[in-house]
Length: 117
Length: 115
Image (cartoon, rainbow over the protein chains, first blue to last red):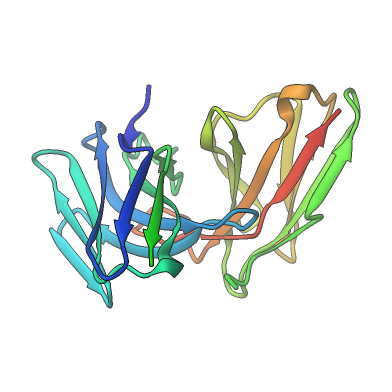
């Protein structure tokens, strides 16, 4: 059962334009959402997060939007740069079940972003 | 650099063997998490330790075990290795127990190849 889904395996964007990466989740108990960027042969790098009490969080060129009713979040990158080319993972935590879940992150399958010069 | 270190970076071994992966968390972090990334499964949570104690278990096989030592570094032991265990193994750390809205910071990973 895939509780976090990134339905677009890849996205191609021109430098300077907006990149929009999408993520859907099914577990309504998730209360914290994160985006990670991953280059080949490296570990995931934390980008930005949002808690369920907010609907938007911004950090420089990166903005995450959360729509709880639709169980959907998105990452906007503006403007996109060639160095942003990487795999982007959406992750979620929460959904405690008697405290046994703790900080477990559930990841989506990732979206490969390519930004062309 | 996340501050999380993992050794070794690469490991090649044979089926039936046992290996140990090591992780040192960021300074001040008390929780260590282990994840497996295989080609067809994505990033899967294996196990979490907090201040030396096991706190949460995910899809971890019985052939795998982990521990966290008093200096907070952690080791993941994989035994009776099978071809399907070939994967990237990531360690992550966070400040607290993970019950709040905590960010996990990942190490560079250990690439395990079982031949």
